[in-house]
Image (cartoon, rainbow, N blue to C red; front, side, top):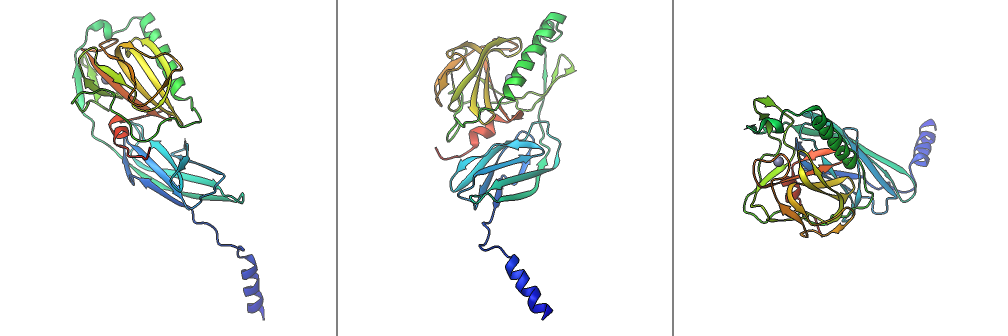
Length: 286
Ligand SMILES: [Zn+2]
């Protein structure tokens, strides 16, 4: 009798309908410093809201296929080890669903670059140091600004039409014998005046002339993704302009701290410094 009653209670406690299965998939499943990963959430076609985080940093989801996806950046100096991720969904009936797990971050071996530069480009006087600090603060504030719409679509285009595959991402730099911040971009050697194109659609977030980057353009692709184009000879766009993928935004130069004409191309995602070569490898539907 007690057993029958318990069984009846268990049946009553079971939900009237089976819950949808929340499925979360990471690609790649193991990441390295500087990687850009994608996380796919499926099994909930009519979710009202999807949010999540990786290592405490928010993930911004967008509708993708029959579910949702987000890009996740692994900073080039991220600590190797296990990072916790979490995804929360509000389903069509306002029921919260949660999933969590861990993602392995591996160390990546970066090259060491030894450079010799004119002393005045390395040992800065007080006013120049202040200028450099203000400029880098302005850039950090910009990267922390999250535009809620996604402007980028499909693949990312190489910003210069040269055979060079780009080099130097993550390089630990020793300048005039002193260790400096790692190199957060990819350098393409190209002749001065070579057209530079936007890697994907977005808005021009900044056109400026800064001490180290020289003449620069920053594109905001939305959802916390920015691409950066440094050392330009000139910029062909203005603040706020809408830019399409492949549109000319400037010309290669040697402005700022540069040993010769080249394009420094970098990408920031939610304030993480990611390898732009990996952004170019992403294969997403248009
Ligand atoms: Zn560079």
